Length: 362
Ligand code: GLY
Image 1: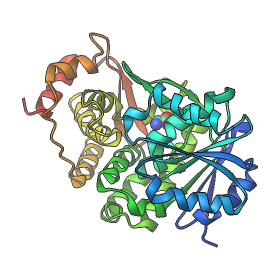
Image 2: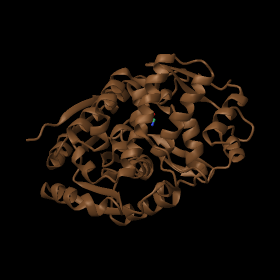
Image 3: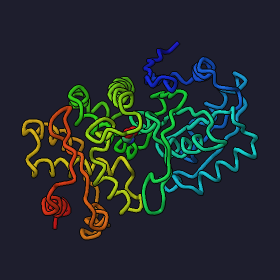
Image 4: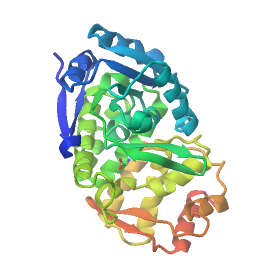
């Protein structure tokens, strides 16, 4: 048997394991049975992931007598929407998926978020299992119970905290990951590296292996990120701690979300976060709130990733309006040193504008 590394997110009655390993998918049904998942399930996935992994997952579960409804959605952030959630629910009703059934989210962040949202609301809540297939989903979105769909006016505006019964991450799924998705995953991984010295050191040493998706090294990295995130979730499950806690995971996201929105989701979430991390690092430097040595180390890691997308769709004024939400204050989570962030909505707008101008080459 391939080794499954099990880590538990400790949340009292909502505790659950993250099962991580390489080539562990054959053990999915055993884990599901051990976690008391009823035999009636629906697998929700997208049209990119289905041809790669769906048949294998279905075969394994059917061999263990699971009855499975298969539900496919289109790929992409636009599917994180009420219309897509409604389409999924229509199929669940037609497939006689009842309250004691379980939804399996097989895919990346979008599939995980929209399936999680449906699980939290369908028949007032059915069980959820996360089967992430992307680096971003394995390190970030499949863990911690954030589920949501977007509103036309705001990302993740409609959602719930809803923890899965278990998360099952087989890094073998990453073998088919497009290079663009590797960068997306790295966006979130870099966030963890900025927050945590261990993750920084590991990533600095192994960046090339990660970029080439060496599966053993990538698994070690995912484990480090999961361990870090587990602690935050266990102490601040519902993101109530405005001075730290889970909020620190929004590092890079003030600018990241603005860029993602303005690109009309042509920039993927992880790509936008990666740019957000770079720009917000520069803001932290200009605001003189960051340790200089740390600043140089992080800058050098970000440079090595060498992600330089064309941002010519961006209009400076529109971006500023988006960041300041039409005249309101912008809240930033800025890095100070490992383990320490500065959360503020009191930065001088002129400082932020100067950094953005420079980044846009204005
Ligand atoms: N993605 C940030 C969080 O899970 O809190």
